[in-house]
Picture (tube, rainbow, N blue to C red):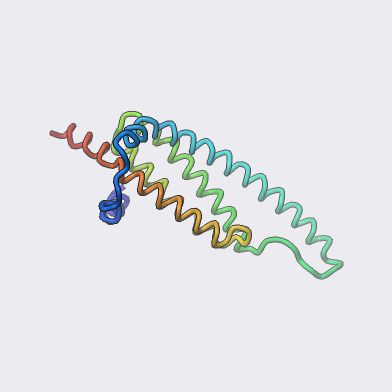
Length: 173
């Protein structure tokens, strides 16, 4: 977690001077973020399962098509890099989903650990976008949408960060 705190300290100045969100919205985020995280974790698990099923089905169809394509001489399907990126993307989705689900309990207690887990999940979203750039169907658009989502997530997280660090400081004094 120390590496995560180092990244947090490096990113904090980037978000410090951005416009603040209204206090009521901050209160809303802090109150409902545990349930949002739990929902996102479940959705990502469902997405990972769906992608697993889709990639498995597509791989079997492609393998059959390639056995038939012996007669035409034209192989079909994904490249090895695209298939690897798809499997890595599925693994990253599962890891991210688990982090969101694990963050539920600390977030309900407004513990800094919960914020840290959301921060980690947001950074993993950027990694997921990087894996998707190698899939021809997703490509640069997938990377761009993932980076925009990461930036929005980081903005919201740094807006409510003081609600979690202040509580930790209050416990130690």
